[in-house]
Length: 565
Ligand code: C2E
Ligand code: CA
Ligand code: CA
Image (cartoon, rainbow, N blue to C red; front, side, top):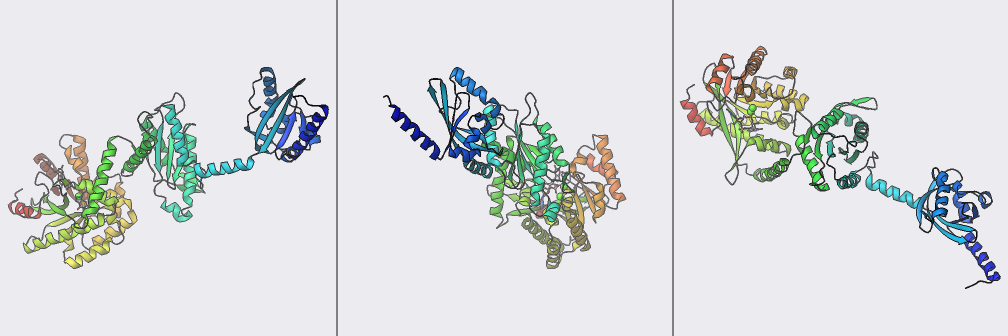
């Protein structure tokens, strides 16, 4: 169809009106990018009047480096016909007259005329939509308090690492533990400062590709991604993270020491899913929190069955707490001076409904963490009191009975009062009651433990430090406590016969304990030679399979009657 001159004029007039009234900015340029038309909406959008820009290159509407490269794009298009922008809508950054940049959607059409090409760009300001999108991104993928990426961001990144199919990377879950002193001063909000400071430190020390995300107020997740060509093993990495966590953080002029724990799992895309990987670091952290000597754990497959067993025992324990189907066994303690039985250690036993015995070494630590240990201890004390009454009746009230007391119990504010009530109710002579407390338990909450031990001692009860020598505490802590007896752990006697150094250590502990006025009992004694050695070294008392395994009360009475050293 051919148009008459009049029709062409009319069409041009019509186009001019369309351009002028269009809501979108419209810019027409020649093949070199020189602006020929700049409509009203473009004036509003870019801050230039059309008179100012007509004849200038469109690059003035672009920020660096696009403005520099623009002529290259145009030249390539003219030479090859290959276009990055024409005909396709695209998001780009534009520049306002005042220098500010903003997001625009731009669609360019090219019209071939006799002496070249004319480009018409239709431009829409999308900065409001972009800001909204960014806000949604920030809300969805970043922690609002600290600005760190959150779990969703981390999961996204993990999926990326999975696609890389490399098993050089690790996932680390860090738990920021006790910050009581800091929180006391700065409130819970203060945790934010600690997280930011720690994330900052980690960022400096980890390779560039690594990612640090905040998952909840006290947990950080780290993807450790080594630089190309570098490899690190889990153990080395753990030491690196441990060193990082051990240094104090400087926050607002305060030095903060973290009591942090972490779990590590190597990312093996062939065997992991994102979920299993997250679960594995959770499990490793859970195990790490139970350690005393180190604050981390590297995931091992066997942990899963351990946790499964634990979950089963938690369920069983809650279930049995109504009728407490426990038994209290007694293991004799023998004096090496008098060669007589002088007491017993009370050791709890639990027989499951299927007849299987569940070791206290397994269920007591669980009861401690789920808050059932106090009830169990009260049960033990009650049971011990009935045994003591039987002894009274049988005229054997001179035996001492030692009860194991967990950290949570000795550090509870109400414990001393409960023991006083127990003594008053049962009329038990406190001198025959001994409480065995491990040194680690005492160290957990030193101030309360010192106070409670002093008050218990004042009631006439004796205190024994259990598993002595296995904790990490310094000997200086002993000065804080009124202690009667040190119970040397089995590990010291096991090797003492074969190993001169172990023997020297054992001799040293006995001598030093006596020097401080403590009695010494050695546990886990299994052989005659060990008995003789301990006697020679001046140990006061012994306990172990050599004389007897823990036994029922009735069996103990028989054992005591027939006992010969
Ligand atoms: P523990 O207090 O160090 O108790 C000593 C453990 O060593 C007992 O294990 C005992 O049976 C065992 N044992 C005694 N003599 C020998 C020996 O000659 N050789 C060997 N290899 N082992 C010996 P048990 O009864 O399984 O208790 C394990 C742990 O459970 C105890 O360690 C204690 O920490 C805890 N426990 C036991 N009963 C109670 C309780 O009533 N309350 C609390 N809180 N903890 C308890
Ligand atoms: Ca004990
Ligand atoms: Ca012990």
